[in-house]
Length: 436
Image (tube, rainbow, N blue to C red; front, side, top):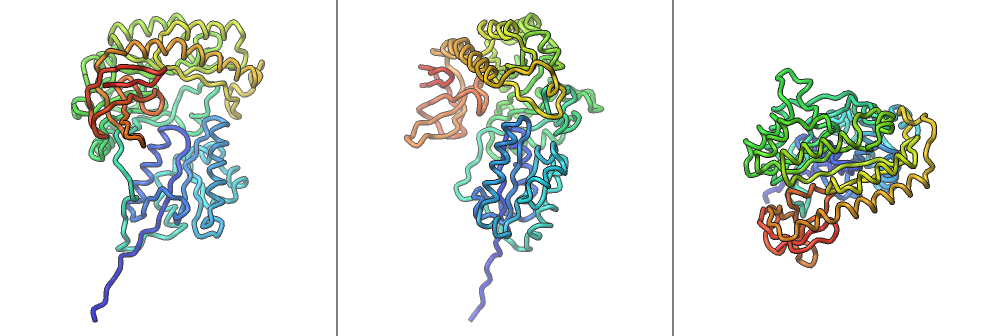
């Protein structure tokens, strides 16, 4: 009787990602490295042979959410039994260093952002290398994505007085063009129809590279190489909006007429205390210049309320600016007091209840100002990238005027996921749209 051999199952690794899109990119990179080394990537943490929690620690609330995720993973039977090591990666180890190992004894290893490239060696040390001949299979039910985030740089040199990013991610450094181009090509091959270029400060790309290229050149090169793919730029500081970039956006149909410009405030004294530049008049002039170059462009911003020393008059100035309706989408956040930042010790800290009240007032004003802009799209015909189907069969996607995860969706009645269809907007409900 002949003997049979069975394939050896590859050790399973689960990655749990907290925080922003930049962390999602880092997790995807770790997953690719582990899969290439023979490990099996799974979504169900309870069956994993190792669990990696990629943490966020940008603000205290994000840190607390990451700690909750760590404790939840630590309570899984295999982790409690010691058969599945728990690895804490990302921003928390980068921000808190050795102090973290004393507080989180449940974890077997800590991997700061700067060491994520070593994830294979770290997992091998804890669970052993993947056996030769092991099988690496895709997670059942996995589907290709319709958009992808691609990081073009990391770190930041701005040192805004409220921000922990330079301490977590280090100084600014651009990724080389060849690396970005390869990442874009891979994501498109895996099914992405839209590439979202992200970084802590996208507008500075290329400034530290020897070739002398800038963001405008990068976007133009990518858009020309992939004419059937949408490209979107996020997290662009006001100083990074050059005439050259606007010209590329105006000339390339596959570059979304969309800019995300985090202003944070409009009062000059508040901005100076934040270690930022600009004021309301300069921002109005900037928006006028953008709209002259790209008529009909969609604009998003983020704002912080309750910064130390923010007076009622300064808050009213911000409220008036928002009410002018210069933006289509506005994210509003109460100031978070973070240890280690320059703003932590500033006098005149605003009471938490007052910060929450101001944030809600500003959000309501933003909805009132932005909603009519969205409603103006009724009757317009626009391209919509179909992304998925609801349980009831309703399809949904996004137009170029909607960034992933933050700007709502467009409901449509035809097309398959991954298709780009033409839809006439028939109705809106605040930030959601319906197309026919």
